[in-house]
Image (cartoon, rainbow, N blue to C red):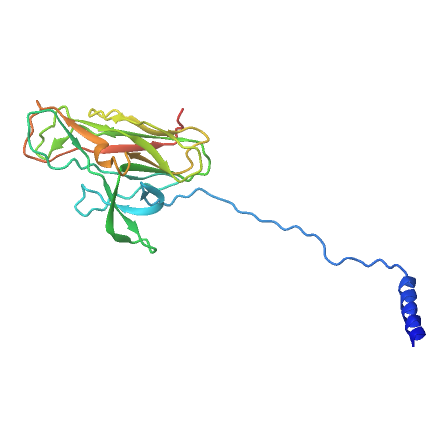
Length: 250
């Protein structure tokens, strides 16, 4: 029995070593396909965003409009999406030089369907610009005051000056930021003031220029009124005109 076992094992071993070497073809292969995407300029209006978190769309409240709804922004691809209206409140008449501050910007977050929610948030006053041209060729934003504060009866608030302070750029874009003016003193005679400017290679996407932050929003835009100016017991108003052009900054 022992010999039989050894013989079988030897035969198997011999048969294994005696098999010829055979080359087998490999299954499979390599193939290349393509992936493409093309972008075009976006002419749709851009929704205003949260000045404290610029990825969240919001519905700003206009304090100078009884309904609270601001005018819609301009169409793209290079657009002004929103600019705060300024409310300097109700003030007592005085013969002293006074400084009054604009109230902070109030706004509502939007729900998943794009509808304003109930809770009102507050943040800095701001202007929002979007460049969806897809060129990074730059742009410039300016503002001017359309005349001195005037009442409905034609009374002029002589010598009153608006000063915008603590200006800063707010964005979620990865494009290089535009430059902005930290302090702007508006000319009641109507001369334009620079606000933001993007040179070539900068400013693609959405940018806010905010005056202050959550902590300083109520003290960043001031109205200076001389004590010598005659004040009537009336409401005074003026307009600010924001002008965006495709002229690149320096």
